[in-house]
Each structure stands twice: as structure tokens, then as C-alpha cells.
Image (cartoon, rainbow, N blue to C red; front, side, top):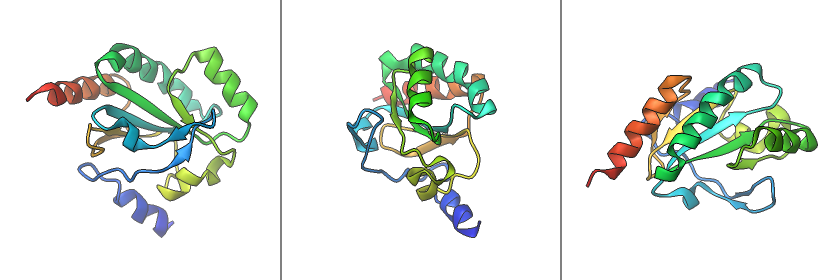
Length: 154
């Protein structure tokens, strides 16, 4: 537990979110470095997580509204069942990249970042700095809009 708390403390607002070099659900390279210059939501979630599913419409709405302006999402799934996850993604039409290793709570990235409850989200600016954590409902849309506006200023 202490290790998890230490890892979470390192992910405070104002800190840089540590990058990773992994493969996405489709086997393609996945790294936050590929999102430099974009506002990115790193979303730890699962299809079996009720609060995650309750928040999903807000996440989808923010993506649809702001994606063209430079907002993107990286999903990190804590699911165990690949087929269930891929069917869910198709059904819900989630276009953003997903990390999945099938390990549930022992998912590599969840372990690396000390995730012990989901949904856990981190909003990053174009440099990878954490500008907000665990935004819910309208707060997500507002924070994304503000981050994009700030990024557009010279």
C-alpha cells in the first residue's frame, strides 16, 4: 500500500506523467510521447467497472467535442477478457487507443502508476504535465476546453 501511495504522490498535478513504451490493443506502438502537443486524458478503466461506465458518456462527449482541436484519450483497460473488451469498444464506438494486457488489477501500467481504484484519470497538457486528476461529469469538458484554449495562446 505504501508503494502505491508513493507512486500516486509522484502523479500530482504539476508533475510530468511518466511515459511508457507499450503496444495497444491492436499490437501497435503506444507511447505518450506520440501525443506531444495534444491535450491527453489517460484513463484507467474497465468494462466491469460501474463508475467507469457511468462516466463513459462524459468521456465520449468530451472526445467528440474536442478531438478535432487537439484532444485525445489513451485508455488503459483493467479488463481480463480481451474479447469482451474488443466487443465493448466496437459497440460503444470508442475510437481512441487502448492498452490491454489481460491482467486485471495486476495490469502492468496500473501497477507502475499505483492505481488502486478506477476510474482513475489524468489530464495532461501538450508537454505531458498533469493538469488535473479524476475529473468527472462537466468538469472534464471544462478542463479540456481550458487546456486547449491555453495551448492555443502564443
